[in-house]
Length: 312
Image (cartoon, rainbow, N blue to C red):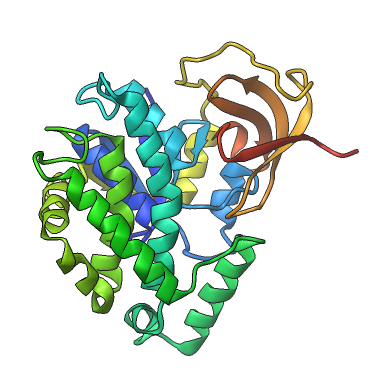
């Protein structure tokens, strides 16, 4: 099997989610550091437009969104499982809540003036401006919580997580599931990237202890790689999906081979164009050709993404 190549950057919370899962499954991976803001020409050469972080590359297969990437990693290394039975449905639902509701409450709280000072206080003013404008462009019509409202929600969510840890080391039992990794990463950002805001975590000591256990998992075996070589890997490879659910499931009246676009429902609305080569119960796959990366297959989860026929 081709190497796992993670396109990410150090302070990306969703990247931390995957880095820990790679560590939990004891997988070796290659690290390509990408810019925090647009333009991201090397990444877009692989994805065709999608620029959210992180992206997992395996040869000429490009996997977008951590919800789908988690499934890929589970397929590659079934043990230890992040979807253990019984209760894997509950773990998925809790993870989806964490990656959306919990995440955005935490980010709105983290990006208060004090938190922003942690992030950008020592950087040139133009960097903070560029980051803010970039994230505004990615947010589209999203409704953001104000910091005070976010603080109230965040405190409530932390108390609920604490309640789940009353009699167990992890949220759903004795071992971590996908729910733990999803709930951890926005809290990790609070602790590591906006430390002046991290006092909120001290209100729930059980959550802090759980975070220490999660951090101790580590990131597995990482090798530094670069974007140019990653693109060369794609160009020299033939797409071969690892996803096991291959049955065509048509919800849009679009036959396989149809030129289509895929974009996120909300955050990160940039589209990827290509020919639809898979539409299963869990994912879409587009085939596209790039002058540098060659022919690649770009994979997206169904949930959270909009599929449309490409306008003539």
